Amino acid sequence: MQEEQEFINQLLNPKTQNQAFQRLLLEYQKPLYNHIRTIVLNHDDTDDVLQNCFIKIFQHLKGFKGDSKLFSWMYRIATNEALTFLKQKARANNISSEALQNKTLDNLEADVFFDGNEMQLKLQRAIATLPEKQQLVFKMKYFQELKYEEISEILGTTVGGLKASYHLAVKKIESFVSST
Image 1 (cartoon, rainbow, N blue to C red):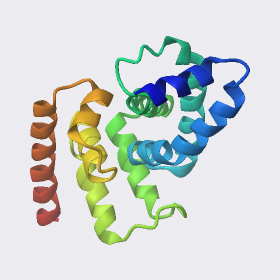
Image 2: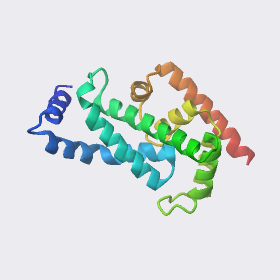
Image 3: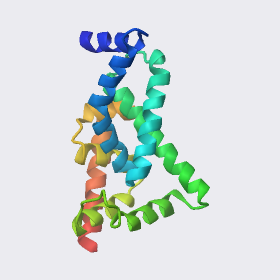
Image 4: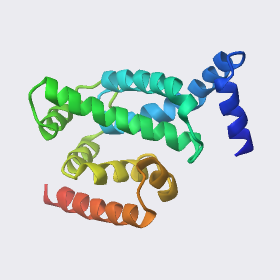
């Protein structure tokens, strides 16, 4: 924790800020991209959300209280930015969030950055049937292999609640996959 606080101090110090922010980008750009990509699914949209995410991180770093790890705080920002982006995109297209998600899934096969097969597309369709919280929990646990404690910090919910959400999500996905 001492090392993280020193890093945060470097990010806040005008003399070391640029170099520290470059380090932040180097360490977290790929994991945050992967996290956002599991939510928005589209590569170009993910890049836009990631850019907004780093802008928000930079702007709000002074307000970081250290109640959680820097990693968890940034993932919370990335999660919120991705969800907000999807809601705004659905609203701009005058469709529901579910319709937007289905449209995105339909376009996923044509996405040159998606290297999945038929089963992975089926998995994505199954995930799309879940409520938003179950989707987030499943994606963080299954795709990013985050620990329940980390997900708890990111989403601000209990570990017990997360385990229940994940278990329900897995059951629903298994049911969807076996019925199609």
